[in-house]
Amino acid sequence: MYSAMPLSLLISGLLGILGIPIAAAEAITKPAATGSIMDHLDSTTITSLLAVLLILGTSYAVSLRVLAPSTAPRFRILFIWHAFDFLIHTIFEGDRVFGAAYGDNWATKLWMVYAQADRRWAQADLTVISLELLTVFLAGPLAAWICYGIAKRDWRVSFWMVVLATGEIYGGFMTFAPEWLTGNLNLDGSNFMFMWVYLVFFNMLWVFIPLYALWVAFQDMGNAFRFRDGIMALGQEGHTTFSITKEGLDTCQEGEKKTK
Image 1 (spheres, helix red, strand yellow):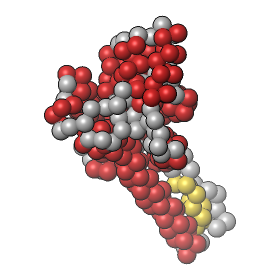
Image 2: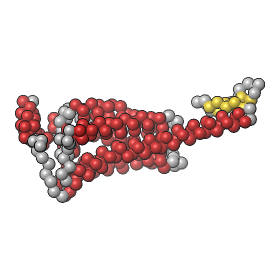
Image 3: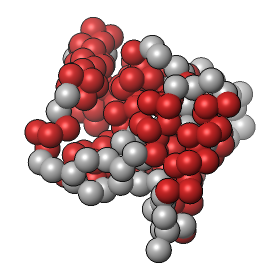
């Protein structure tokens, strides 16, 4: 059976050498308290949850401001999601390079709450840092660009939704696969808050909604290809050649000069 005592002593000693207070080491290695959900609703936890709701509300408000009333509900939902995604990655995850236990700003305090369920987020875990670098510097800006593309009805937005959704699902797998393969040494699911709110709910958001984005993008691109195939078939029946360009639809009768 794995014992946390040697790891606790090792991390405490290393942090002591680095000048990090012992309290920070205890926050990393101390087993989380069990009990009801109310036992874990301290001021920092409540602030964290309210901040998430505020970001979600902001994303919804922005969608009302910039999207046309005729925007399809599925794209409105995905606009709100990608705006939320961008704000979360930018505001909450920008300080994750050195680990939450190494800082004292408001964001690190929020991450230390989550670190009670997954201790890697308090440390400078190399796997987490590698994923966060991609998340902050690539996924965040791409989510913002997707919002812009949805607002402008850019035809390329479905492709980029596929890219981002695939990356986020893969990133989620790479976040937890090492833990599953090593017996969940850093995860604490001993109570409802840690297991179902922090580890399951907040992480599964970045699985199911990207899957929904993939489904919407698949349908959108499928419609485009079916439309193209229908136009081409119509052209063959009427001896008219059609070509779809960035500027519009070009037609050309047999033996005639192509007109637009």
